[in-house]
Image 1 (tube, rainbow, N blue to C red):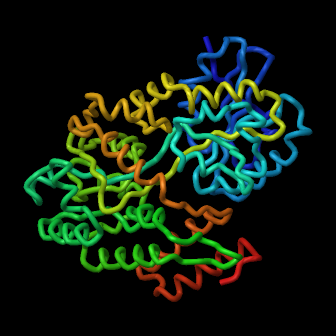
Image 2 (cartoon, rainbow, N blue to C red; image 1 turned 60 degrees about the vertical axis):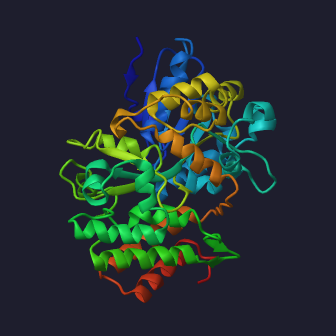
Image 3 (cartoon, rainbow, N blue to C red; image 1 turned 180 degrees about the horizontal axis):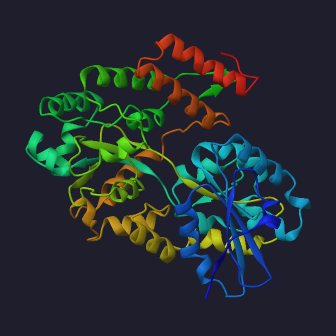
Length: 426
């Protein structure tokens, strides 16, 4: 029987500052070291790949914090030294979040030439997801098992009271563009409800549809879509269309309960984890539609670190989770996750698959159409994206709550960026 062991003082010497480790220990032998930022991603890899390996195999998971400067610096240091590291301490796999992919590209192997995945293996993945992990030379440095097209989750009971129906196709007509979204917010307010829980809730829908990168030629850029988000968010505050709570806070979670007054939440398929994880949640009272604008939010890429001494095993992991149709179908159905395989998602969308939490709706039918519409939308990524969004949202929050005026919020944002990245201009 497999047992988890706590890694004590000796192993701590090899951990990045701020990281945690969980270790699967059978006996001394071959080992795969996996660095992750998200517990659910690590669990998924374990359930759908690692547990199928022989019992004499050893693997370790190390958690790093991608929003923690010390943790990230130590991980980058280890990656730089990885090729000369002792075999038992080598990093083999790093799971990378969407807004940090550019930071990791220089440390990762070429998925095709170094790891051995072929064009045929990758042929059913969504192009927009594959392109995220390509470097400036077009080499693929990572693969993803999921795509994250997003839409709008809403409460059926509130929809019936305010709009007279809870059918997704009919509610979509009420939210079909930003003007209708705002008109519907007014109707909800008049009936005693909020359209959104907080100001950040709609940010990803605007951010994904930017026309410009966040930083270009060392200039920090605020795209017109971000100005639109600022304007709408302040308007929603002043008119009482938003409850005004902080995203991911306890108040934000409480707003999802049965007695909550918030109509809906933007999110991809993984938002189901959040909604269903709330105690006293309104299970069965939720539904899903596209909302005012197609977008995507999030994602996790599997990357092979330069210096890994287990390239064949990394190949098998990547193939199983991002290319193998049967495994990916199990992930999609077992986790209600939108996987990065067009054949699998089309098959499920055309089936009678239903999600009880959504009142028997199959959200994949909607998400497939959204993902297909995103395949030609250009996405601009830079090494500054993670910090930019952190500082931008932080300072805009202070604007919305009255701590800063807009000019002060922008000045503080620019100051934060220039302090972190000395090469940047305003």
